Structure formats: C-alpha cells, structure tokens
Length: 272
Image (tube, rainbow, N blue to C red):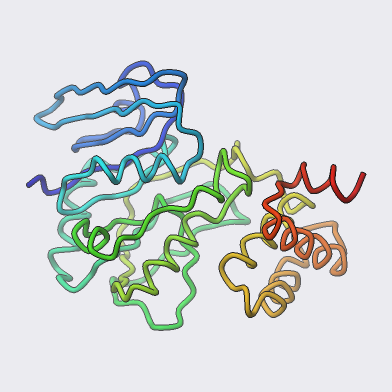
C-alpha cells in the first residue's frame, strides 16, 4: 500500500503539466473536469500520477472521484492553484505517524488574502470538542481507512459548479465529526495559494450572504437564526450591506436551499 497521495481537483487538463506547476513530488490523483472521458497514468520521480477525466460537474463530485481512486494510507485534498513545499509527503506522513490516533490532520497553507487569512496553530494538538473548524479542503489530510470506514462523501449541492457556491468542505467536516473521527491541527506549513482570483468569491455581497444562508440551513437547521445573527454581526466591517440586508439575504438563501434554487433562479422566481 502506498504511503501518501495527493487528491487534486482540476479542470480542462490535457497533460500532466500541473505536476511541475504545483511542485508535486509524490503520488497524485487528478480528478479532471473537462469535455471528455479518459484515464491517463504516468510515472515520474518514482511516483505515479493518475488523471481521471470526466464531464462530471462540481468540485464535490470530483473530490469524490479522487477519493474513489485513492489507495494510499494518507491522503491530502488539493486544488490545482496550490504550490507545495518540496518535502510535502514527509511532512504529512510524519505528523500522522507521530499522532496515531489522528483520523484527520489540518495543515497550514500560506495565503495572500488579508481578509480571509488562514489561522496558523502554534503546535500540533488534538482539536477540542466544540472548536471551530474554519478549514478549507486544501488544508485537510486524512487517514484513508478511517474516512472509508465512516463512509463520508462530499455534497454535490455546495461548491464550485454547484447550486450554491461554497461550503462543501465545511459540510464534509461536520459529517466526519458526527461520525466520531478524531481531528488534529498541525503547525506545519505545506504550501501557498493565491486567492486573488477566486472562482466563486466576489466579495461580501448579496450572492455571498445568500450562499451563507443556504449553508446554515443545510448545516445548522435548528439554530439557523443564531448562526445568521452571529455571521451578520461578524461581517459588519467587511460589507456595504446593512445588518438587516445581510440577514434578509441569508433568509433568502435559506428559502433557496429548501426549494433548491440558485441565487440567479431565486431572483427570477421572487425578485423579478
């Protein structure tokens, strides 16, 4: 059994040039969303790179495809705009080996976004029961056997290419937590990513709060009001929308989730 694999979602790839672009020096699986169906494989530096190309739309579905093909003891979720440190494989595997009870390990990724800056932890430790989980998928490494045993998969409703623009990683983490898997956070940095040209984040605008409302309805149905009030207050310095407008758009997102309506479809149905 292989020790480590990178599970990367990507789009419109015709070759393995992402290996050099991302500074990959390990086994890697690319789930490639494009206009064809194919399986490609190549060897490099003693490692195996696989590319599963399908017309399957949605980041969650493609993460699931990568998971289906995964076969290493430890796996790290990846996006194709991350540049990794040279000794990525050694860092990830060593942290799991030092903490044999860990099912999920959260690593640090440097970012150029001062608003959505990633939290860096001072030491590797087990997460507390009610600790916040502000972690994007590219920070998440897993013990594959634990995830398979828990039978957890990414939603196809949230994330790039889906009805609602983001939140698939948070929903996955909540599902994993409910299954009782053990979370650890690491103080190790594994790479860097630029979020200057996000494919989904257009600012703290109406679309953003609509998506948040949909997410809170999916993740925290019984406490939706508390979460929406908290988030409206938390973002008070990040948007031109008033407090009432932020709440209103999250409530619209709640309705959108119940009726499976995207931001655009909701506007056509209700705000026309």
